Amino acid sequence: MYEKYMIVPERVKKTEKGFEIGARLPYYRGVSLSMVEEIEVSLDGETLPQSDVSITVHGNTYNLEQRENELDDRWEMGEVATLSIDNAGDLPAGEHSIGLKINLRIGYMPFPSIRVAEKKVNF
Picture 1 (spheres, one colour):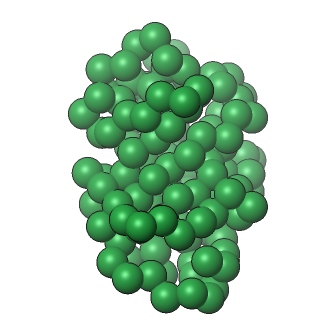
Picture 2 (cartoon, one colour):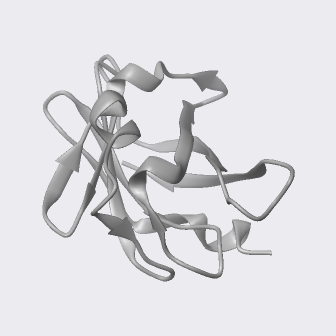
């Protein structure tokens, strides 16, 4: 249901190390960052290593290891976080396909909450 809002194309940009995308939480409540089990980003069909992805919320940036232990900072519904992807190689200008998979651990759900989205964007 929220998948179509996950990738924010207006917040996509090329950086010196790779690229950034804006992302919204695919859930109707906010969650602490430790409940974000997985953030998987793909570029033109190629899945990029999770170790190259960091998330910035409220001006605070977390890598995979830091996010796993972050209990106090939250990603709220509707809030646009910045996902920074390093080591993406030389990204040519033009249209690219960005894929995003987010796996949330929700305490009262007996199954994982995995959401997947894909959009064409221009760098």
